[in-house]
Length: 490
Image (cartoon, rainbow, N blue to C red; front, side, top):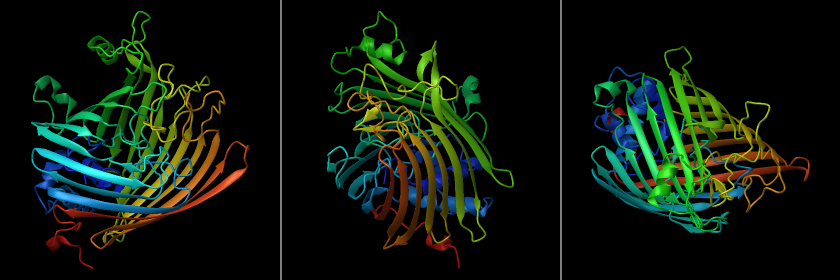
C-alpha cells in the first residue's frame, strides 16, 4: 500500500488506469510510477461509475475506487512468498509485476495517509539475498503534499516509461535507491495560454546516493522525467539520469550545475559524471474493433550537441478488451535492445550502463537501475493478463533472450559488465501465474521454467521454479473490489 500513491508492481491496477486513460475517462499522462492518487481524484470521489462508461471501463473504475480508498488513514499490509527452484535472474527476470526477484521473502508494512502527510514503515526478510542483506526497509518513506506537489524521502521503487518488460532508464530490477523526490500530484494543464497546447503534464525528479560497496563509493544519482499529453491518447516523455560525485570528484554547486546542464565532457571541467537521456512515446487507438497501442522508449548513452545520441531502448505493441465471460484482458509484445546503436551495423558493445568514471556502472547493489537484462542484451517478451468478474487473475509470459552479447572476459565485476549474466546466455523462459481472493487478501501460485545456454560453455540448463504467495491489506477503507450495492450478479 502506497499512501499518496497507488500500489506499485500491480499489472491489474496499471491495466485499469491505462484503460480509462485510453478511453478518455481520465485525462493526463499516467504512465510514470509511482502514480499519485490525486491524478485519479474524479474516481476517488465517486463509488458508482458514470452510466456512460462501457462495462469494462465501469469494472476498472470500481477496482480503482477501492484501491484509492484502501490506504486512507491508518493501514498496513502483509505479504509472503515461498519459492522453490531458480527464482532469480537470469532464470527469472524482473518486469512491471515483479520487482527484483529473489525468491522467498516476507514483507510487513504499516503507515498513515492523510490529506497532506503520509508515511510508511516497511520491513522485509529475504532468504539468501544476492547482496547479502537479509533484513531490509525497502518501501519505507515519509511524504508531504505542498499544493500540487508531493515531496518525499525514503526508498521507493520507480518505473518510467510505457514498457511492460522493462524500462531502459528507471525500472524495478534493482532495489530502490534511498533519496529524496518531488513529483507533480495532479497532471492538470498549464493555466498560461501559450503553454496550454502541451495538455496535461507531469514531472518527477529524484536525488539519491548509491551504495558504498562499489568502485567509486557513495556516488550520487539524480534523475528527472517530464511527460505531456498534447492530444488525447498520445503521451510524450523525456527522461534523464546522471551519476556524479563520489571520492575523488568535487561536489560543489558549480560541479552540480555542470551536471545539470550537461557540461561534463569538456576537457577543462574537473567533473566526473555519467549521463543517460532520451525520449519515449505511446499512441493508442481505442476506437478500433481491436483496440491497440504502439510505444517506443529510446535512451542515449552519449550526447551530440544538446541531444542524446547512440541510442538503445525498446519497442512494443499492446491490445486489450473484454471476454465473453465479462473479464478484462491485455496482451503485449515487446522487443528491447540494450546495445548502443543497435539499429546500425556498427553497434557498440560494452557501452550501455558502463562508465570509465563509474566502473560499477549504472547499477545498484549488483542489479541494473535500468532494463532488467542489463547491458548488451536482446529480449523479446510476449505477455498476457486476464482478470475475471470474480477477481480471479491470470498472467502468462514468454521471454526469448540473448543476454550479455559482448561476453568480454576483461569486462566483468567489479570492473563493470553485465550483472545478470556473467557470460553470453541464451534464454527461453515461460511463466504462468494465477491469483484469487482468499481470506480478505489474494493468494497466488506461479510456475515457470527457463532454458539457459551459456554459449555452449557449460551445456544447457533447465531451471524450473514454483512460487507461492499471499498478500493482504489491513485497515484503511474497504477491501472488496466492489461496493456491496455494485457487486456483479451471477
